[in-house]
Length: 240
Image (cartoon, rainbow, N blue to C red; front, side, top):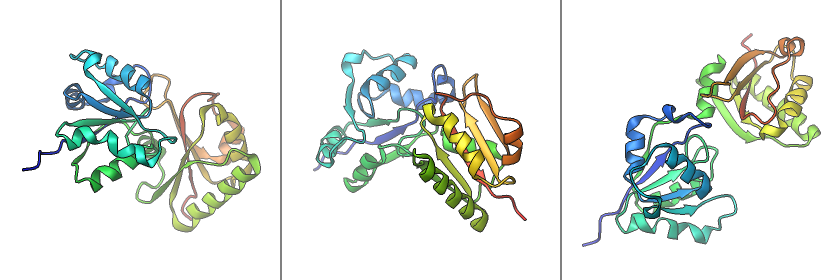
């Protein structure tokens, strides 16, 4: 008789330092019961687990790293503990594993290997930003990172603005924090004056900043300096 397989728990991580309180108690309880983890960076994962005040010594914990450089043939060995009957945890750098995160690759493989996948409740910057934006939450699209070069970025923003107007769909995206200011400048130069532009920075943290206004408002009232602050941006063409 084949051994029962373990489960793969998808464990959300706080969106910043000092935000452990955003995780439900049952998530931390499950986390403390695991010995095997897959994470984008083992160092970050250890720091997160340490903040939850674990009862186990770190010498008992095992970490595999999964990131954009991980080769396909490296994935299956990461799930071997689950195939041997041990429950495992998949951790993101911040937020929910598998959402704008390389963990989706191991989740897909877990399904192929008939390993039960258990998503747990926790913070998602994408959904929190959408919730707080006042934009259409029935129809939305997340585009990840946009092109870094200004002409390409402007063209992409125009295309998303047109999509939003055509389908009444909120467009959601993220930027590398050190490029936030340049991105905002390009967006305000490119988008139409009445297009809604939303900013959600430092979500769940004491420094949180969330606001949605038409582009012409932002031009008169620039947002605060968001350099090196993690942020989600949103675009929506208002109903006519």
